[in-house]
Image (cartoon, rainbow, N blue to C red; front, side, top):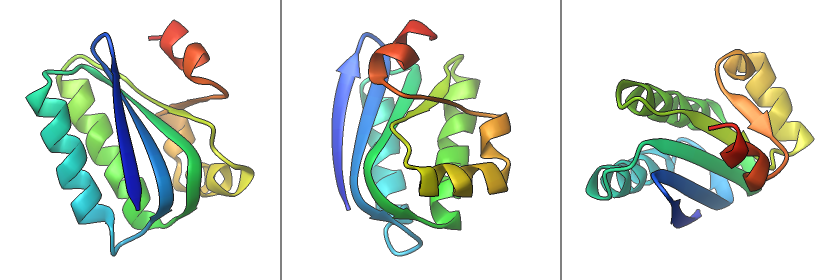
Length: 111
């Protein structure tokens, strides 16, 4: 799993490349949380374009970041989710809590 971070205003944009499963979730969680706190950020946008696979650990990772951002007055958005990932998100109930957009500009416009 490869992560790329970009900051736009007070928003952390995280791009994934690889698989987000129980083997990688703890390491990814630690990296995201450290960066988010270190930079004093508010919102998080998960760019899922390069995500090949996600299991329940990935859902848990997103939910945990949702909680942290919400407590900080921020929002969480997902962008570029494949139909397979959308299906997993829908089955988990995640799409009732977190909005999915087609592009980064759409997500940033709705913050």
